Length: 432
Length: 204
Image (cartoon, rainbow over all chains, first blue to last red; front, side, top):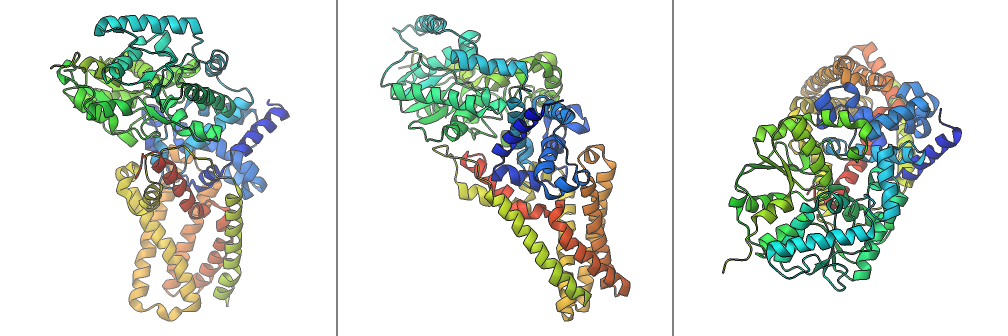
């Protein structure tokens, strides 16, 4: 049973999050069911309790009990429910385990109901009373402690960058540094996903190579370099704000004009669209996902690509946080049209792309792994239909999820970030 | 007499309750959305979001389930016609020429069929039953009854007319409490959707 203090805390968080937008979404749903087909969980698994409205109703019913006229006096009539242990359990299973907040249902709702907003409010309430999956909570705690979500120490970071720099200098046959650290007055500060430093340096090397070849004035900060923000998934606005603040401080200290992020869907959404709201101030620099300058480099002729170096069929998965919720929809297609020979679209795509199943911090919540993979069936079917031999994407969480999906559903298609394909296709040294 | 009572008591109650609802909504703080360098134009996105109701091809769900859109359009057209009919019968019955009467009858009959299909689907499909509360069934049943009595009234059946205005009166008072109130929130929810995603350059 939740203590009365827990209930009060959860309801207080609900009250704090009850903006005009949320209130309108609570009222406007007519339970028409048109959003059912929008959800990859429902389409892949087929259980009725996976339809978006049912999931939103786990919180909407609590809201009705506390705010709706009929719900307060006649709860059974409108399905209003008291926030008791059973409701909290259902809310937790739904908000953490069967919704990635991908927003596809939002785009398919004729009324404009923002189920994504409802679920993120539920997550904030659950986080406030400690009903947050351990893995997600650990990632946030590690981030707050070490200033990156993988707990990479400062010396390990410097050693890794030094080693990567040597590799790149050898490959490009140039004098370093290819990856400048703390370069005061650089135009761009580049943030990476912590897993690039710890496990997957190829992406960072590819991005560094692209920026070097383009002659970009850029740097990384040793004060703060992690683009991820898992508090964005948990609804912990205080932690999310702190993480955003570190990026702001590092960029301000270096005096950069732009902050670019490696290909990380939620990191992009958090820093590009949400951080200024959390901080209550407008950034004195431009924020970009790396896909945007990559497209600009190609368009402006700052890098030249040979698409024959990526000769197999390639398809592209739109990360929800960067595409549907972030607005980067055409740049990846432009890049692929120049970097590969045979680009094949999945259907549907762009705003209507299906979530891969790895969004919403799902990869950090191992207790829902089975459901996460089952929910990806629709995405696996989409990929299979293209007969692509490489799946390109632009997000580390999507990359991890799709790699697992490719293995489990026997798709035989490795997954790559866009910058890896671009780096492979770069003509260097330039032909005279 | 009854028809006048229905409107002169029911309508002010409805308006007052909706005003209260709107005051509650507008007293909530708006979510902050100050991200710099928006990628799209707000006005274009919000207009686009608001007109989706008459542009079903813009939504994948209505493109896919176009019969549901037709059903939605027919059902709501009938409801609006039926509400208008209650005012015409009360205050300007002379407007109901034979041809107008026939046209309204066709609209109401089609709306009844569409509403019936909606009720059937809600009661029969597991994915609809799990999201339905008594209000979802009763609100729809009440609208169907309203349409049915409107039809009977148009056909000139006396008891049908009495029932029609009794139901109309109940309907006016019940509406702001039930899910039927959704249309008051529609422009707000669509505007918020349009504003959020237009700034991000996702819709234009």
